[in-house]
Amino acid sequence: MVDTGSELKVLISRRRIAAVVKRLAEEIRGDYTGLNPLVVGILKGSFVFLADLVRAVNMPLQVDFVKLTSYGDSTQSSGRITVLLDLNCQLAGRHVLVVEDIVDSGLTTAFLCDYLRQKGPASVKLCAFTSKPSRRKVDIRIDYLGLEVPDKFLVGYGLDCAERYRYLPDLCELKEK
Image (cartoon, rainbow, N blue to C red; front, side, top):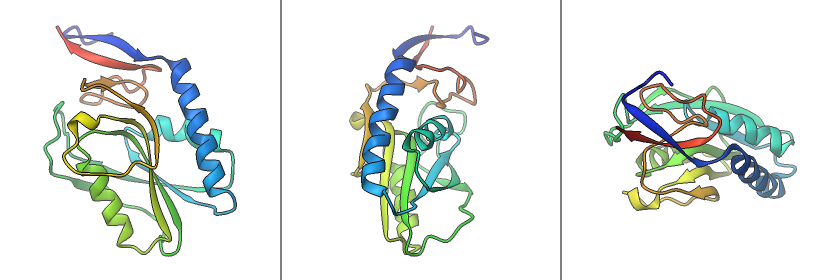
């Protein structure tokens, strides 16, 4: 590990992550069979989870990405959401599944779901690998939830701190020394 100012503690192992992804994929496949859903990944954090999830779902679907930010280089959300990259496809009449790495305050996810609903899809549902309900600032429905996690700053499995730690195969708590 390059960063000597922090230490990592594994909270969710790669084996447990794989089991969670398998469970979610089975639920999603059961609900979306024959619908060719549009799966929308939120960059950058969701890309690892999304890749594992769409392979496990193993059915026809389309993938697109949006990039939003509210953190910058901080470990706390600023609450201001900025769209850095928008979708490249039409949503009207489509079944849309938003894939998120973590729902924390809920502000970014609620913003995106509302934004997508304005484009006339047949449905918008949310799949989140993790959720921190203790940090919620807005009420948001998570249709497919992997795990609830404690109010810790998490990295690994796509989650980062200032662009570090995404590569870790486990979900870890980042502790300042």
